[in-house]
Image (cartoon, rainbow, N blue to C red; front, side):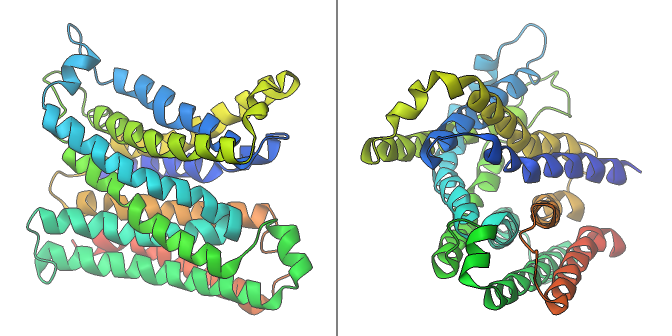
Length: 338
């Protein structure tokens, strides 16, 4: 029962993350870099800070928690800087491939690296026992994502250039695939950052919130990378004036804040959900892949709602549904092998 509760909580957070790109359409007359930086302030600084405060027991402070192990905190932030490259290119993959295909490729790569590397670092043998179940589970997840990627390829092949532009304004398959793969590899550093930040826990902290200080350090590192790039693009493209458009400020800030809150909800939910999973279990080790698989499922549902799959052949839809079915199976596979 606890496992089911944990999965439901992770799924709620995943749905929030997969919905975080919807508010983009409500941001008016801002360049991509202006939107990305502004939503990042909410997603990677404000809401993670507020979340981390929940991990502060009475009589302590957030600074004391972060000072428990300075090395761990700095390592988490360092991985966050690397993850920031993934977060940055992740946004670009949405721009070139759309919500469905962009998230599918990026999150598939992120799922594999973010699950298997921490397991290997912990000394897990991936060819026997729980390690083998974990490896097979990740492989099933990748298979489902690959099928969805194939569906995306079929969609691109059967669409005219005008239809591609209508669905995704800046559609570019080759460039988008390369960006999405880079995003996936670097995004896996978030999982490594959470592992590095494991010592950032003090006595009296609720199990529900104990991962949130580490999450804050990772997102702070990611903010550094993204802010540097976005400010550079503001200067290069002469778009600093976006922030001075007073008539748009309230609207754009509101939707940037909403996007940031929805994005952060995935890691808030992941931390809470993991507290219901058995420590040391395959499900615990597989939790990162579970989050990524759910993100892919929900992102493709949003892709359908946003009509990114409109006009495709029945074969493409069948392939897409098959991929989603494989991902759903991957979510429960570790439990079936108990």
